[in-house]
Image (tube, rainbow, N blue to C red; front, side, top):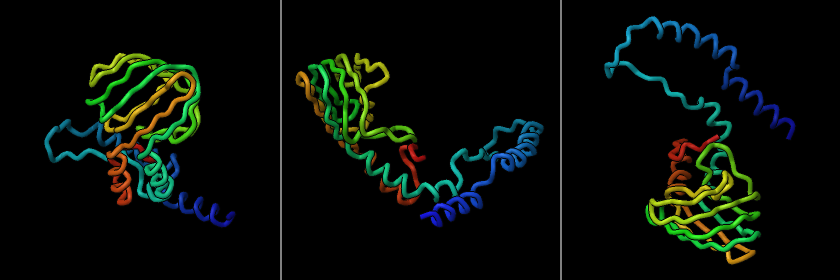
Length: 186
């Protein structure tokens, strides 16, 4: 295991240049760009701000695991509330109620590069119907994806939140080819 860790560290060192080297290479390029005429023609190419190939390769397996976990939302909640909701994308959703709870389970789509914890606090209050959304989460809401299908219910103390996101299935499939449709890879 120690040998594997050392090998991965060596591989990362070879494939990902240190920040100081990147800055040394970037300084002349930035100077040249500053002095170059401001031509907006199609011949001028913009640089890709994505991750290096070494970075993508090093995090390939963790990103595919996270992509699989993004597909399903399956949470059990405990806390006071009375709420019900259904969603078939953001356009076809309905929700009414309020709850504040502790959840455990698969949190669903990340919608950002960093993983969500399988346990946490959640609060969701208000009314939503299609794109008319008068809900508030106080920053600890369920963060539903705009392409997610599912339902949630909170009858008094125990609640359930279940969902599936077809776009995350496609994100996983294209991720096998190192294409990140959701832009949520580490």
